Length: 266
Image 1 (cartoon, one colour):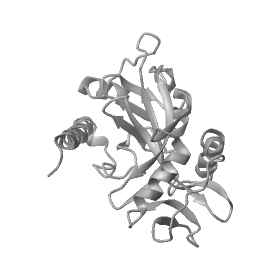
Image 2: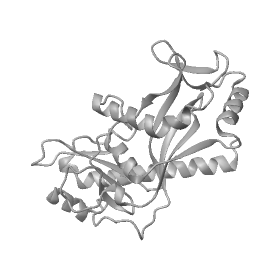
Image 3: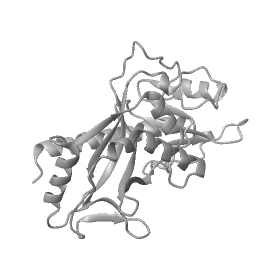
């Protein structure tokens, strides 16, 4: 029987997901005549939440939708390359099927902000049946399978990497998150309760950039539970908004009148 605490967490997570879908659906309805894709991004993080095609713009306009600022802003699955003896990006929602330029940026991002911490860690160890490997020659260890003995291996790795904790946080900035998210191809980001913000200088529209919000941004390195296995994961987080120091947007496309204004102004 599921413990009441876990049942509560699962219920809250389900409600949060349902709220997110409802929010996206409402916004999509305001742009119905301009939609390029309809709901295809809901379970695919490589795509934008809303894509619209507006007369006068050659390329589609891509919008990311968040239910709150205090949430995850993307993640990387990383692994230890046993041949190159270093940590690498194994798979990223933000550079999968992207251009060489995009991949180069992600590699630079990883090398500058993530790798300096990882390079001093001991490589993950465990039996062949436990180590989760990927790559052309299965040379990249990306996590652990939940095979007999995995608990002992997991505990040893966590103690080695995190000490008494279960994660390590690396400080970022709003500007870094803005650039990171823009590499996914998004032009704008809508945050419930905060409104609409630019992720690039593509549009000459009088709303703030995402980086004009003042909040704490960081990257959380942890071992993520996936049901039948664990993966080595870096998740990007934002929280602790300082409203007084932030530039708040005048547009909020969760309101139909503001969605109409956006179409007119871009």
